[in-house]
Image (cartoon, rainbow over all chains, first blue to last red; front, side):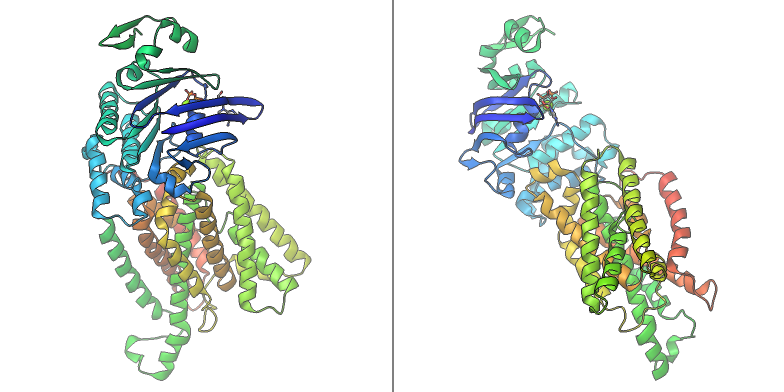
Length: 250
Length: 319
Ligand SMILES: Nc1ncnc2c1ncn2[C@@H]1O[C@H](COP(=O)(O)OP(=O)(O)OP(=O)(O)O)[C@@H](O)[C@H]1O
Ligand SMILES: [Mg+2]
């Protein structure tokens, strides 16, 4: 369980997160949605200690982020950031193998390489495994980074817009992998999504953020309707219910 | 060729060049005459120390070039020109002016400390610059080094020590003799120790976010890297003077051909670096025989050619 208590975050004069409290259940896929600039990445960065906590408390199970050593957290949670800064000159396999660093600390054992192979297979990267990252397409590269996060093999996985640049096949297959990890391996997934239909289709819970506050949370069926879309995104779209899941007509 | 084969080949080539280096010089020395005590002495007192000094300097500086490039995430920065070398010179000046009776080791410590301070300064500036604008960082590095260099010249001018600057800025190995280069072994050891955390440097090269999410103590790795660079640079400047370019050219070649997985590529980097400096040193010994041309001069010409190749050469793709 991730529990966020009274989180307030300011950058300059602007309040990005405003006394936000949230509980993310264990073993579920939670989708974080909200308009551009709502504070989703900021919230994720604080949970994953990429940004320094200003005010409030974040607990992951019973680990207090901010007091727990960095390398212990690296074995507990992994993050796929929204923007990858610069491309290192590495092959896909090398990149994915760095995901094992928190466990192997530079001494890769057999089981570490097995995990790397598993990650490559699950993300359908076997054919690209020996290619240099800078020779891949945007979506292929994104998949390589997801594979690295997968190889880190943590109980909690937090992904900031992982579907960026991915085609529909890759997007659906990634969402299925995440569901599978959650259902059969007890992983907890937090995922920032812009396409509400992916949230509806694959998430157990949807958390909507607006102006640094939680606007609404619950199952997709509870949360997603026309009024919700109007309120959060200021857009009017029809919502249809199919197999107990709401889908936005885009 | 894969990396393991290249590493072995590079080592082999290096050994051949090193052997050659032992027998090239003003005094004729033939392998068959080595049993002659005079010639053996020449080998042990002059040729061997000189060759070892070149090997250590070339390999350690190439390794340091890779480290700084990973830390600042820019391929056009090298310690000698981006402030570390100038910081070391400033340190030596301070040692000469204020602690003239201090031992060599104390002077080296002062030089290394000043080199570290100016490297940290560079790092603090670079952190504020966007990594997506590589030219910014490269130019800022050059200007930063230039400013500290100007400061060094000013202080030296005031203190009437300009002739020292001349010696430090044109590094060369003709003065290396037994008993006058051994401190360089510290540089060799420091570079070897840095290799132990090669993985961490590679991860830091992927950016702060990735480093933290993989559980690395980002600041600690950066500081360890800067300390490594500073010690190696200071020892080089104190012992043989500035040797520019190796730390720039070799990491670029190796990154281009074999990638950035530092644990696998640093040995190649070290062997290439040692070979480059040694080849330049040997050329410097024979071109105007019996006079010598400083290694830095030869290297300037060769490296300009190599750099053109790097800039215009075709990028090598998948293996
Ligand atoms: N370094 C910064 N300085 C000032 N404001 C910032 C900074 N970084 C982000 N912000 C602001 O914080 C707010 C929240 O940003 P955040 O990146 O968390 O949004 P987001 O919900 O992830 O948006 P997106 O969907 O576009 O990724 C935005 O209004 C943004 O302008
Ligand atoms: Mg975001």
